Length: 115
Length: 110
Image (cartoon, rainbow over all chains, first blue to last red; front, side):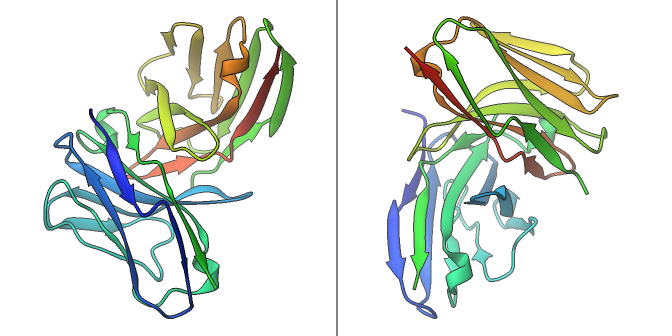
């Protein structure tokens, strides 16, 4: 089954403790991206990747890191999480960059709480 | 900077009613517009994608239109069903970036 898999679904952590949210897709997609969703603010793009070893900042990249060492994986890293990073996070992928009119496939989300 | 607005924020209708959800955007230099559905506790599902050169797209009971000149898109849902209850988001694709609206929460009652 074609899917985007995120782990974990729920995560509670404390300020400053490094964490990684994993994202994997099995569709051989080139484009992958991370979003956070906050009430009243909608979804905002954190980082995106056009292909292996190619990443770029979205609208809200501060406090986050990403890497794209393999085509299927695109982990989101919070080196020193803070309470304002408490949010619902989504990973998404498409067969090419979104400018070429390919639909985005989303993971089920990761609810992160930073205490 | 692209801004995307969806009105209304919430909508409640009885089953069987035809309804229209609205999406407006400030920058007409877009590549495409997508409509998504989000169910509670789940990710987003792409419903329709309209390329900038297109005027509308249809899928089953759903019809989405795009008017770049006025910065508007509408999602028309025919003969609504309780299973259509969800949050609907529109998203504009610009240069490498996707900008989302804040969504319309739809409740269809039996």
